[in-house]
Image 1 (tube, rainbow, N blue to C red):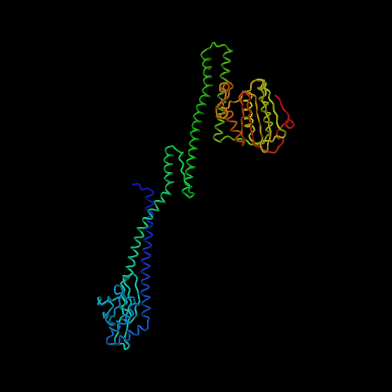
Image 2: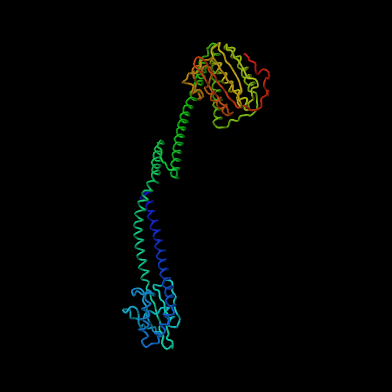
Length: 497
């Protein structure tokens, strides 16, 4: 059977009240008993230390009516002795046999028990001793006549009934206090449990909702105590889990799209290779010119597959963090000029005007020169590829503070606004048909962003359809300014290719 946390809290509060009252009862009862005992013996010692009373008792002991006279004397001192008949009495005993002779309680005309103090008094010793655990208190004082012929024992006996009555009254008060404490503790525990358990119940419901896939439920707690901290932490955890799940779903969706794109990109050249290869194999009378064209298509498609596989392997290394980049200080201007020289022939074939303009004293950068030149090659290739004949490609460079900025602008077809958010997505092509015709894999910009990002830089793209595209690459400066492989005086010269 399950017990709610509220019931447990009420039970604990009630149990604490009962235990507390029990401890209080034990200590109060013991305290009253000890106080009553100490007060009894202190009073007896004070009274029996009174010389007048003791002289009067000794004088009366030598008279013929000694018992009656001693009784009258003790009656006079009854108030000081605390005699109340019901609980405390005095007895006059025979000093030899210990037999009862008279007492304050006429109904108790019997010989008291031979207690330890009585036995001591019969030997002539005043006995004020008390013993642990006794249910009574007593004092025995020997009284002898002046001639020593007769002797008596004055015995005070207290049955502790007063202390017992007081303990019983305290016990009753404690029981009543426990009853009141029970009601108060139950009420307080219910109030506290509502205040303390409400956020916990909220977290329980939120956890149940999370188990069902709903992470939107938020726990509202205004307190700044541990419960409030726990609730806020729970809300943060739920938000992080929701965000993580969203990222996982997005990653899963991208993975599926990636697998589908890879399959499609590989199937397309494979289909072309198989088609042309089967045509060559099944037709032996194909003209040599046609056969040569078929073989050229097969080789181009094979190169395209190889490029896709190469780019995929490169991206997988970046994703796995296993791509090692070399670190060297080099001239970014020299790298730009080398890449432009490599692509200049293709630009002239397409009738494009390529211009380079670099600021004087352009800072050097530190990184993997080959990888950064790969990025420039990819972006320049795209600029040349998508710029109509008669267009222009401008490459400018400058430094600002601790960074170097390279901007590649063209007057090409541009990128539609709806495609701009996806230009760095893997396998994404703005003009899919034209990209496949030119052998593009749709991975170039993804690889470029990975490389530049690993160097602590960034790539920004600005484009307008029909007006052209500008790609800005920003890299951190990696060393002192200088020629460091630069071409010196040519840095401020505009080169045309």
